[in-house]
Length: 105
Image (cartoon, rainbow, N blue to C red; front, top):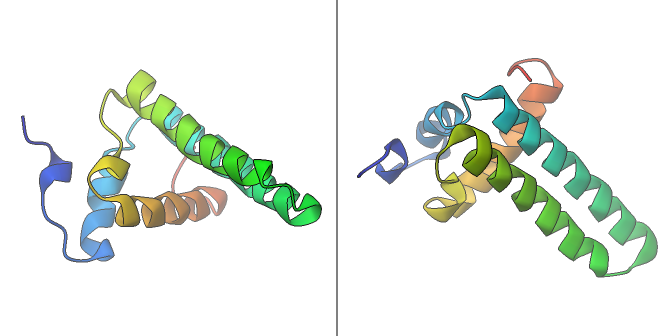
């Protein structure tokens, strides 16, 4: 069955409202925020140590927590599967908007 993510989006500006609609459950947003924060901390550890394990940790945290949020709380497929670049961009825009109070936790 087609979903809103099946729609072709020409620009990120067109995609982002759809992206936000796929994150309507606050637990999903919280999981995204936690995963993104841990990914940033892992990247910081990579820079400090030079140990590539931290790059793997960043990817696992960033995507793992987000996907758990989608499957457990939102009950939808992550946008990453159909729109990887726009989804990655959406993750960080939503992270910033949550950090600055524009999107609720």
